[in-house]
Image (cartoon, rainbow over all chains, first blue to last red; front, side, top):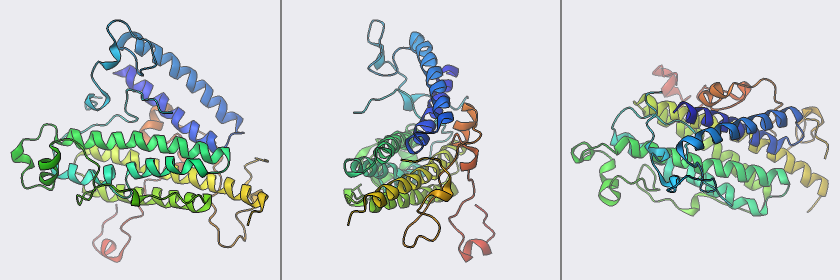
Length: 81
Length: 190
Length: 66
């Protein structure tokens, strides 16, 4: 759960940097921030997927196909975090 | 093309069972100023938006709005998933329930189904971007009204997040408008 | 195209009739990822918790503050 929350946080940073860069493509500082966050995102994603299975159907899975496994996003109970 | 990532954009917490509240939240699932309208509107305008910046912002904000549509559907579902028929009877959710059970469905709080007339794409970047800016303000205002009537702290927290997103989107569309205005001025089309 | 983000050089603002103009944001400090998700934005200058709905006379008279 902690790992999922960390991924959600870094993902959100990327959502924000993407939108900012879409209208400010020449902002070097923003691009560096984005690229660093992207690296962190991929690290966390690999850690998560090794334990819990693929986050997208483009990622690899152990046997059997773990992408279909619950909980699906709307089923996750965040009330204890 | 679109990929799906198995996570919500925001950790949605719902502490209560409240079909009446769900019936109001659904305004942002299928209403005129809701997330489905926003997503479809921005993605529809992409084809005729000039400048790379314009196309990118419509793509990325449009995609984020679909992620918000997922959050609203999740709020509705969490508010009713444990509701008994007795808890649903006599609330505005009852009319929804007899047609859709507990499934979220794109209509507004008054029960009117979502329609494409809620959106437009004029092949005019100035008109389109102004519609987008207005849409963000209308969505923000709707979230403010919803926050006032919400009595579930988790729901309120999620609504505040979505409201802040509308403010950021407005800023980005405003910036895209400047970029497009400069582009048009430099081309001097009549 | 020139992109110095200096709003004074942008033609759309001062004196331009019949057009809307939003200043370009210039990124300064940013929130941590945790704070960003909590606040709904990465940028402190875009945080605005103040409601603009309900400034009608009725709400002021009844003391509602949003």
